[in-house]
Length: 395
Image (cartoon, rainbow, N blue to C red; front, side, top):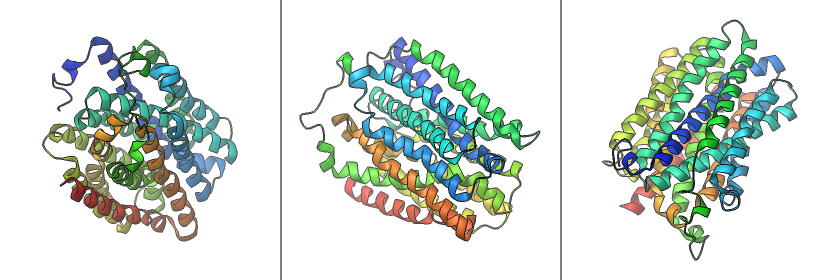
């Protein structure tokens, strides 16, 4: 289903169109601040004197927050409704960023980044759940949703680069901008009318066995694919700028530009995914994307000059582009049949994004950043294995 066709937009009521637009905006802001964490990390590390291990723990803190949220986020709309729950959780990331401005204490910084992850996890869950529901499981609208994340992620390194042009302390200006965008989202979100997708609106039917997905092989295969992918995605988002700089192949400004290039390519890739959503089955798409991720990740890890990093970045961006939205659509039937499945799916798959960045930080502290990033070749290999198993099951 093409997301810009009448079959999607034309089926939405005016209130739903505003709601979808605002959800896209929330995802755009998420792209800004999630990539912003990795972009400002080298400057924050220098100013506060943080080690690789502490920096890795901060990246993991964000993903721990997302994991914690997934454990209960699926149950809250039945009590508070989507709107209130979304509003409450959307405040937390920007509160966390405010804390980073006033302290360099590792424990308080951990709590601050944890808050960004808790808020991100909730918005991520509700956005995907609502768009998946309204689009009847089509991967096109889901990839459009994630394209807005990519736009924010693309602009984030440029914003940080502009703010730090006069000195590394400019990372604080970038944080002020992120907080300002959060305030805008807090002003627009209360205007949404979400009755058509809220449990209290009577649209959500509870199955007789709400935890039946535990016995569904498709759920577990999809979760395994997403766990491996998020291990790679979270680590790339958090460590890529640091890796480019510490490898000696790029200056600080070039590293930010390469990260921006990654998201230019991801954005273009997601636009292509929207066009081919109805032509290529998710299992087939996931296999080719996974193989590409492994190949270009190897190019980045093994490359010693600027050109290999450039080629690896472009290739990795193209192959990562449609992974999240297509993986979610791979188990649409499960998510529609079991409303609680998405929350547990987010929690389980978030384990990879918690463990991988910390492992990279620990390994990098002992053996260097190149070996640390090389750890990602293991989840890349497993990603290929699970997508092949998924293809055989669905064939």
